[in-house]
Amino acid sequence: MRIETLEELAERIKKVSDVTILTHARPDGDTIGAGFGLCYYLRSVGVRANIKNSDGFPQKFGYLFEGYSDMDFEEKCVISVDVADKKLLGDELSGYADRIDLCIDHHISNRMFAKESYVDGESCATCLILYKLLRIMGAKPSRLIADCLYTGIATDTGCFMYENTSPDAHRAAADLKEFGAKAAEINREMFQIKSKGRILAEQKVIGSMKFFGDSRIALITITNDIIDSYNVDRADLDGFAAIPLTVEGVEIGITLKQQADDPKKFKASVRTVTADASAIAANFDGGGHVRAAGCTLSGTAEDAAEAIAKAAEKYL
Ligand SMILES: [Mn+2]
Picture 1 (tube, rainbow, N blue to C red):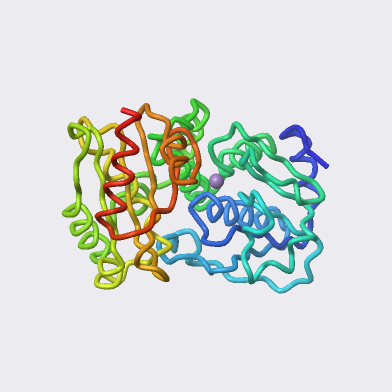
Picture 2 (cartoon, rainbow, N blue to C red):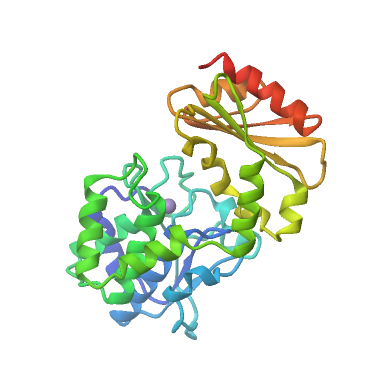
């Protein structure tokens, strides 16, 4: 069943007890911020609540859970936050897949797997939904809750740079700063700090940059060699795809990633300023969104680069 309004959601939240909160696998700032934010709020009003994740919570977000420990109770209610599909719960939490009571999410693609769902596809972050919910409920976020919610809004909007950054997101962030969110510290932690290995890997990858189409196409290659020599987490390579488009005058950015199980295969991420990225990817049976898409190419790194650059030139 769909919960249509924040007021209805507030009524629903007022009735919960002994809650387990589920977050999605390979957790990001939004699912972590929403999960801990909701958990701390419920505890603050005397509701027992715990939070779970299949992969554990990365230490990068440690400032949100330093003092956290699980409570002892038998759960009566299961709530998922920022989870668009029950598959995204991951292996460890898969046993919960068919017994989620309430889902709070902002993915328009939400599969409506829970008994009741509040999904606002217009909201840039689940944390923004939670912020509005708490205000409707008359709650004044603690400093820690403000940090949680700020983290989710900042990370899902790329530090307020993506197109999804609504006026509401800025207003919520301003309010959360007044409630004590340490925005500058969080932004530094989330958007500026990188591991030494990551920076050295980026240096190598940037060194691989090639230009095509009168320098309007830039292409970088992440090889297995680079990943292995700098001990970079394969799951954590997403930011690389943004690098080619940071070059002035570049309109199509392509990132090739060599596959661990088959060095003759490269996954390509295509990012564009105005061209149709999904159309470029479709040349190689791939697809995606208008500004971000992907496909897979075979051969050597040079073959893959030549092939996709040649295809991309037609879209300049
Ligand atoms: Mn999110």
